[in-house]
Image (cartoon, rainbow over all chains, first blue to last red; front, side, top):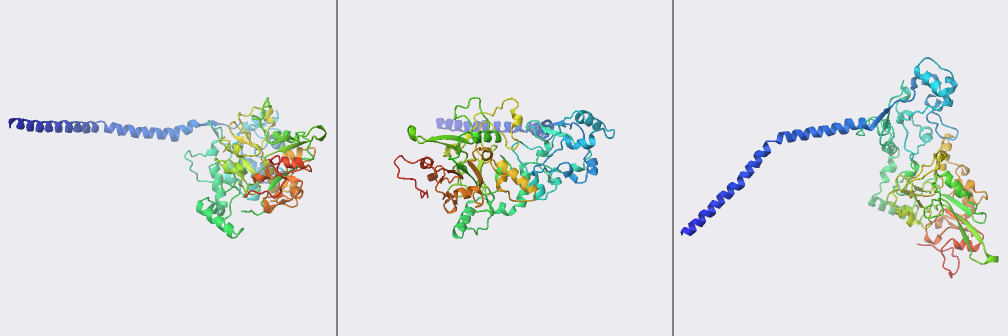
Length: 267
Length: 272
């Protein structure tokens, strides 16, 4: 009996002490958690904001170097002098290629001698015109070497306005700071001012997505029917087999994507 | 699916006229900024978009005969339009078939250099850049601005001077036209050939010299109906858009991988 009682007591005691042993650390850890929770959350929030500021404000500032154009240029003043708008200086050559930024030859007619007394004008004539050196303009819209863009197809055939892609640069009185991406070497106008890639106007960015955005609108028909889903292909194929040439879906010129071909702009 | 006014640019090379001078190769390299090496003797490493091969009938002296065969990219149409060997295997959409021009393109910036296309091309028309191009001092100033130079690790090939097509288009647009004329778009090799052995134009247009010369049969993937015309490895069914002309039977036979004792050249061979 006594032995049994002892056993029972021991078990009870064990159970009691076990319970105590297991419950007390739980309480302890809960108490410990409550203590430094505030600083941890605070540290997290501060860290989050610090990284956001670093990523969205400081990094873009570091990423782009600010360069000044060799000399300043007043578009408004020149626009008042010429008759043909943008195309007076940024003209198409006989063979359909685009001249882009004017060469010295075009400026020399008027700027043989210093006109007016602006320091930029004096610098232009003394440094470049009299020495016969081209002005090393920094081109805001310079694209990578592998990108081929036909101005004549957009301006002459599609009748687009310069402003659609280039913005109101023709109404500026001075050239803005040229921001060059230190990593890629391209102008910030390609990526756009907004580091997040948001844009309000068509001229805010000059990435391929922006070409595509406009082209998608223009060729909405092709885009919608040209998507390469298995069902779509099957239906197209059936229509083609049953009555060749009557298929309604119009594909782009590319066999790979069934949309526009990469080769049009990239080589 | 046929486009309205779809072009099918192709080339006809008269092997009886070709003297093997190599002007076309030089013109091609200069036109397309093709990189070269100091030592070009290892043909596995050198890049030649257009390569002139020497064929021989293998007979002893009095009967020996030699033929030079310039080989650009064949711009294969495949069994159905655009099913070129290389286009169908490219995992990167870096090579493409354009249904408006029939030109097989190569987008260097998309290519990641797996070289699957090189393995699939039966004509060895594709080349791999094992190094970044190194131009002799000052030569980078003479590079064509219309063709982007390639970098290490990408595949390149003949583009039928596609940039010339674009320039011709631009000129046409400036003059208010939509269509370009035959002589406005000619490849560099065509214009460089002193023997006039190379002809270039639209195979879909019966007025163009190329279609008049080979008379392609549209019902059979453009197989030539001119008995002197042939295409390389016709029986593979790649349906190239480069045609060769030769009055010599052994040259025409050399254009395909016939067995030694095979009966005779069959025009009807067609892979289903």
